[in-house]
Picture 1 (spheres, rainbow, N blue to C red):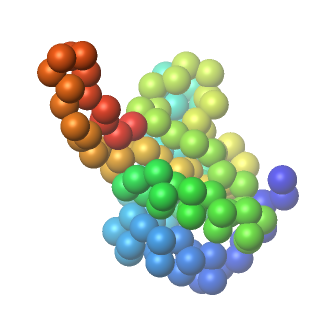
Picture 2 (cartoon, helix red, strand yellow):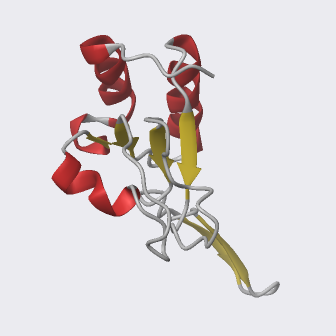
Length: 116
């Protein structure tokens, strides 16, 4: 997918989905999202987006599709092969804010939690 700079329209669409604090465009603030755990792979994202649930994540991905913007998923950013690093100006979609805690099932000794 070709990365295209859509400027304020694209960023405004993302902010509408995740809120103003859920979109990071300042290089000083997104630096930790631009390098893998080993420090071997690094890049520069167009932005870092922090959805807080699956619905926001789907809406962010749809916005990327509508604006023809490439994106990279990023969980804990602990990979060793650079798969979560934005090497071509992609948008990082981080699961860091997905911290929901579901119902606790004591009988099954399980709980569903968000990816972050």
